[in-house]
Image 1 (cartoon, rainbow, N blue to C red):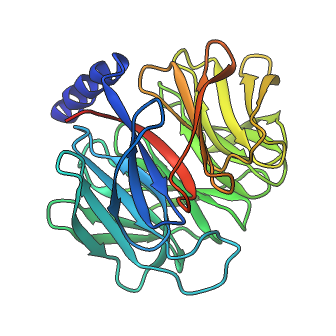
Image 2: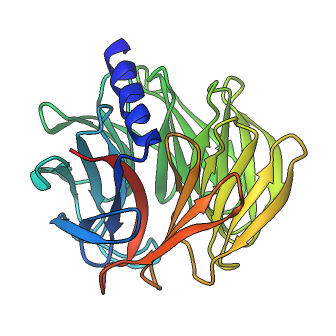
Length: 326
């Protein structure tokens, strides 16, 4: 655990100086793209068909994508069944790991203790553990829900939280015992983020236009915060006082004060953001507008667009992650 923590902190310090690039999951093009902060396109790496989410290794050297095989959960079909491993230094795909009978992988996170990948699949609905060294599936868990979407692991590597989009609940899964607790939330839960102390999980509920707060100790819902329409992904400010989220229908990035439980601001994008990630230094949020082929860089402190740029034609940008320059 100490090794992973040190590597993560070193990565954050590097990125805080903005000695970094932006890695964009290009869902429509089935690639991940490398861009400067000014939007200059540098390179791309081919991955599996229609990658959705991606995550970095604790040392920031590798990226992992879920090769879903479809453009959206509304699209019918068996889907893909692989996860791609990308070396960010050489800008190459170094492995494509089969998930076997588990198709339509979507959410992905890293267990900070073991380094394993935690992946949600929609066909069937499972939480899948992939050993990054052995490059194989080592364990699976039934999420006991429908359309398992985003997964978030706690800092102790003890519990994973999976949003079950079509059953309106979050599955809290104990990664050792397999105990699963279903927590009712709003309609179509998708993105989630944990507070720094790990005591609260915030979940974006796309169809009920709200963010719900879950007490992770009690495994119960404690609060609802109304948002702009169709919040799909959610992040937290560095002081853990403000939620930042992407609202698809209203074409906005919204801000909500956790203490008051109210939305306090919204930034108009003029495009439909399908993703929302935040920088390690807490200064910026990134939103990918897939249909418009645009990446937005939002200043969290100023509540405004700091930069925006077009991706290459046909990219279909989804999540954006700042990565160090190797």
